[in-house]
Structures are given as C-alpha cells and as structure tokens.
Length: 182
Image: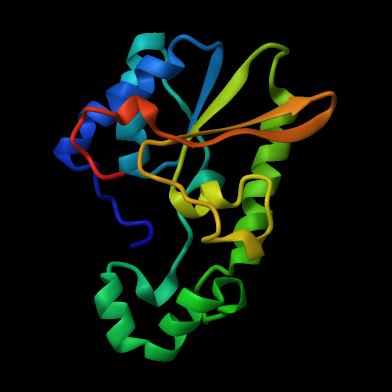
C-alpha cells in the first residue's frame, strides 16, 4: 500500500498493452505517476508513440504514512479504529503523517488545472496513476469509493464548451479475453 516501488504483476503486462492499443489511436500527451507500477503500465503506449511520459509526483498514490508497506489485513489488525473509519468514512480519516482525502484532492486538482491549461486543442492527456488519484478526478473527497476504478481501466475527463466533463469512466472492455479480474 502506498508509495512502495512495486512493479506490475506479470499477468497484467498484456492489460497495459491493451490500454496502449486503445489510446494509441487517440491524439494524446502522456503523463505518469513516478511510481514504478504506473510507469510500467505507461511503457507500451510510450513505446508506440516513441516518447516518454512526463512524470508528475502530484499524480502519485495517496500518501498513507504509517500504513506504508502493510497489507490491508495488517492495517486492520494494528490500527483497528482508523481502519474502520477508512472503510466507512474515508473522507473523515485523519492520522499524523497520512495524507487526507481533502489533501489528495487539492494535490490532484492543482495538477489537473495545469494539465488542462497546457493541452493543445484536439489533444487529450493520458495520466497513468492510481485508484485513489483517479477517484479524485474532478470530484471531492466525499465521492471516494463510490466510483469503481479497476486496474488498467480508462477514465476520460475532457473539456466540453469550457466545462470539465467526465466522458468515460472505468472503461475496461479492452481487457475482455485477458482472463484478469480487474
């Protein structure tokens, strides 16, 4: 959990290639979290487009503080009360050294504002990031866990008539037939 330098599981490499199959047909700019698993997922698309993603720490995973490196079961056992709050009211959880969902939302919102401001007309930005960050795309912390975000799914936020709109969310048809449970 958190900012550990874990790569993607080998069985998910075909899923990253499937994402590239979909997005290589679109005029896109590449942005990625600095974490290895996001960069490895971005690699097939970067190779097809012959360019590396722009790495932006603000699209990195939620900073979980003392929970870093523990499994969910271990966290539930060691921090029972806080874990129960995280599972029931995640937007209300505050722990020393741990990023709140409000802080995460502010971090991602700032990055998105810059990203949208820099986009050239007719292009989209592809951000390889993490589920906690994807939940923050254009929403508030109270929406966390109320929107499904599968591994290697595609969520698109665009600007239509000057207004940011969620155009597709948790799209995963490109993963059909890969034998994965996103």
